[in-house]
Length: 251
Image (cartoon, rainbow, N blue to C red; front, side, top):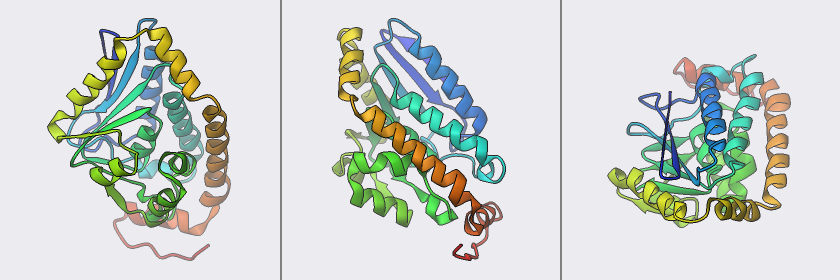
């Protein structure tokens, strides 16, 4: 489910769970292991996070959000995102097609996003009566509290151009050029000292890591201890899986 390669100081991890690269708990565990392996490479200078197929990822497995599995899923997902955010070398995300829900949350932890012009980004969790804990913690600092609130509270998506103009996407290219553009950016960085790259990233993230850790912990606690105790959260998830409209109780 995770393809790993390494060449000339650049490591690549590719999600490979077609057609939508759904992030199951098993896939997330494999990704954490792959990140650990890459971090241990002394000559790694840049990491590229990409995906096979037309879409980066449509998000986490909705069935695994139901009780009682969410109690394991949410901490595991938070841990995966933290490993990307705190990865010692720069991380470039290469995004084509849909990048939704947990998929969008994963790339929010990268240092830079290269996106295809046909890419779309969104947090549709509110449509299911739940929330996106990682995005609640990370999106406000990435695109500002107003846009973050709009995305999280409407469930609507941003096109690549909108994401680029909002500063979420660093570079926008033709869909077929996403991987090559991400690799080009990675190799431009990988020409430099690995020690300097790692320490520059660490300096860039000074102060940010502590804020992110606290925000992620708070958002996860609200999700697990409060949101998933509501009637609407369970109803929304069941309705999605049963392909019907939810009946909200507003509690």
